[in-house]
Length: 138
Image (tube, rainbow, N blue to C red; front, top):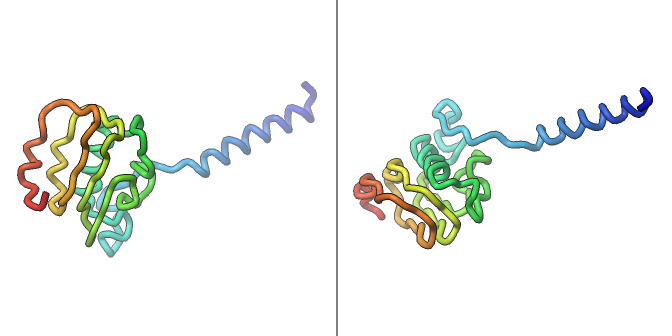
């Protein structure tokens, strides 16, 4: 390979790597430090609820779901597939027939404003988290 072709090839590889990195998105930052003055401006919901969504995604193998659009990629959980919000709280989770597998996390009990939960027709195992019993709106 002559020098001119090698230089072109190296530049092309470098550009491709830079382009991919500039479009890759980081995992969702649910920390309170990510919140601005308006507590919902960054993630739209509290850090506690944001972490519970990430726990659900992780414990049910979210990367393998049929549809996991937005999950743990964007900073707007209320726009994630199957998540509904109202007044700064998660109020519905609809992931019916979405290839969830694994067990449900105890942190599901952090959704104090949850009125609708549908996780039917998935491959979930284990027992229901006791924390679901404290969700009075469900």
